[in-house]
Image (cartoon, rainbow, N blue to C red; front, side):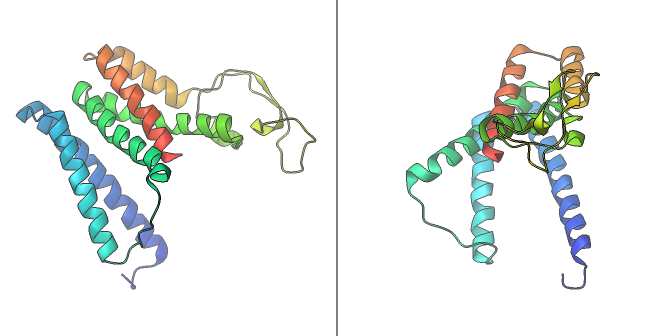
Amino acid sequence: MGWMPAQGRLAAGLLVNLAASICIVFLNKWLYVRLGFPNLSLTLVHFAITWLGLYLCQALGAFAPKSLRAAQVLPLALSFCGFVVFTNLSLQSNTIGTYQLAKAMTTPVIVLIQSLAYGKSFPLRIKLTLVRAGEERGGGGRAGPGPRRANDAAPQRLSVPQVPITLGVFLNSYYDVKFNVLGTVFATLGVLVTSLYQV
C-alpha cells in the first residue's frame, strides 16, 4: 500500500479494526442466541484463530518472536485468557448494548490502575470524561510529595461532577430490561481483567 499516505493507512486500519470488532460481537451473540453455541467452545475457537493470526503475521515478518521464561509471560497469558473468557461470558449473559457499554469502562479502569499503581498523571481533558466528584486535587494528579515541577498542573477545583462514561454505563445497566446479576459480575470481571491485560 505504498500509494496510500500514512494517515490514510492508519484511517483504513482503524476502520477495518472497527468493522471487524462489530462483526465479531454480532456473530458471537448470534452463535449464543440462535445456535446455543457453548461458551467454552467459542472461547477455544477464539484462541485457535488468535494463534493462527499470530502464526501468519510471524510468517509474513510482521514481528519476530522472543524467547521468555514461562514465569515472565504467565501473568500476561493468564490475563489474556481471562480477558477472552470473561468478555465472552459477559456477551453471553448480557444484551449487546450492555456488553459494549461495559467494555467502555475499560478506559476509566486503565486510568485508575495507571494512576494508583504507577503514579501516572493525566491531563484535565481526559479526567473530565471519567467519574470525578468535585474535590480538591493538587499536582495534576501526580503521586508523591516533593516540590512542584514546571510541567505539573496547578491545583484545580472540580466543583461539578463529570460522569459521562460511567454514568452512561450505569444508566444503561440499571434500566436494561434484561439486566441480570450474573451478567454484571461477568462484565465487571471482564473489564478488570481486560484493563490489567492492556496496562
